[in-house]
Image (cartoon, rainbow, N blue to C red; front, side):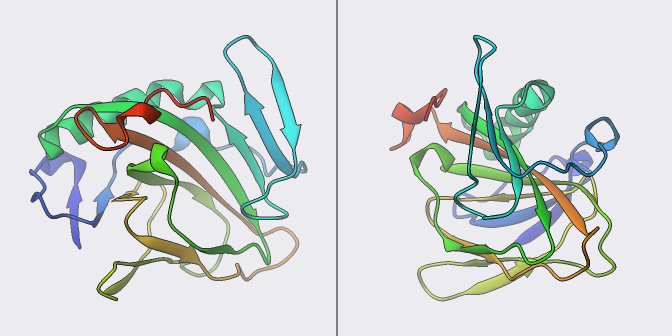
Length: 195
């Protein structure tokens, strides 16, 4: 595990698994009032929006391919290509608002999430709420971020999870997730994912 600032632009070693990136992008433009909605809202290029239950984190509110994150999805791709030294294709992105009691259960991601970024936008929690990662060897690390920080990780390879969020009825934690695949990698067929 490593930690670096976007401004350092250091090259990742070939065997990297998870690393924290400080100040990858100011979050101000993405901070919105706490939503009352729950479920998943899927935004499609033709303007249609599909609403369904949030199946990964019940009781949360998520937005799949919300237009406000499209530009940042590509900006982050460009940063990652520089530090990884390889070409990536975007697959998809989404953001999620977590509320009191929400838990991200231990899992690995589907093929469209070969290279993943968890970007912290905002929180009104009075404590740090870590995300945990574990590799096949059983090595475990927990990481926390400030708004504007991100965690780069291998979504298909590492188990990751969050314990149930503590707080009160007004507690909220907002994250965005940006996913990519390697242009010459095993999951390239998931580029420009449409689910």
